Length: 220
Image (cartoon, rainbow, N blue to C red; front, side, top):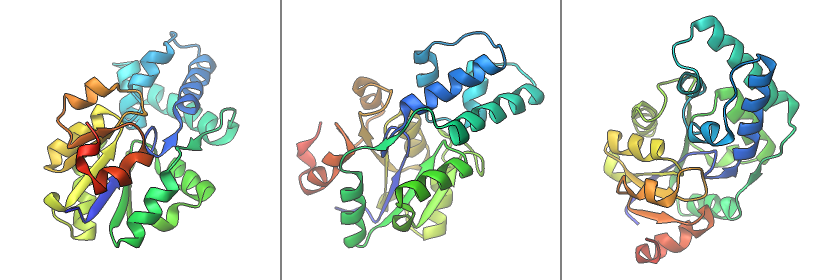
């Protein structure tokens, strides 16, 4: 496999956190008595930075509104913990194998830094990653800045980098950065939507990644 650097999205790719994100948004909306949003509307913005996600759900609001909703969401996501999130099967095995093979690993996520630090600590996976970028420390997906900064930090070229993600935001970010993308269909964007962005392949879940690396024809 020609790739030196593997950059993973987090939510929907390595961790099954969809229910936790949706329930945290719904609780925040209720707290502030905002106009209701369906679970599907919330699912569709998973992968964006929190500010960008809120603007997509409630466009045209001011900074005070944004700050209120951000604060409530972070409270429910980081403190309440009413819905548990689990790593997808095969996540640890993939990270261990890639590490043993000498690859660089990184995370590019729409999560905030506090949220990523929490899950890396809770899962014990922080050891595996050489670099991380979150939406509250640089430009959110689908802008390429996250990938550009990671590649610059690790001194890896675009043609040596693979982005692995479950949303079209990940696919678009990879395209914008001149990087290949591997789609994972465990998130909220269906397979057809991911394939429209021409990833190198689309696997059913992260646990299939090692088989795909050994035989790239094993995935669609």
